Length: 196
Image (cartoon, rainbow, N blue to C red):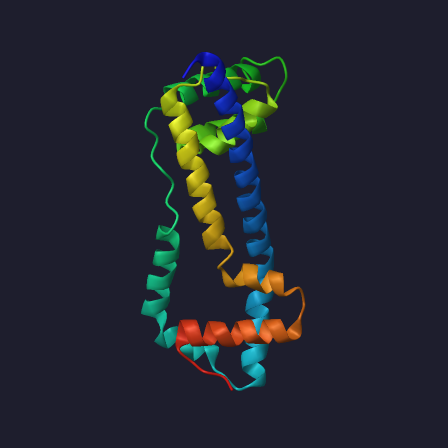
């Protein structure tokens, strides 16, 4: 692939990566915010029906741990094939944001870039690079492959997120029948407990 096509493919993948990253971040914010509401709805539902959810949680503790591990394993961060290009991008960002080297004090951006680089969160690193106009000089095939892997990872993460009960609760949008059905579904799935 010639240089011009590689740059076009890089730009296309960057847009796709940023889109999926934004989608996952949105989902995770919703899950965080609605997680507490979801727990409160469960407690209220169970209390009204004399269902001892605390006892069921204690009795099913091992199964719950396995379920959490399985959920976490569904979307694992891919390993990078070659981070040379990402290293160059990180150095460009550092030149623009490092407190000792930059003209402007942008410590937060520098810390975010350092964390992204350390965690191999290329989506976040490229997002920062895009914002600062740090364009890689010639995206390599390995870099494009890593970006594609990151996109696949984010898609899988999104698929996992939309199956979480806090997300499903959010989608009920205060529809009480939907919420009750979701709680019944959760009790059957997690605790093998049927509510009539």
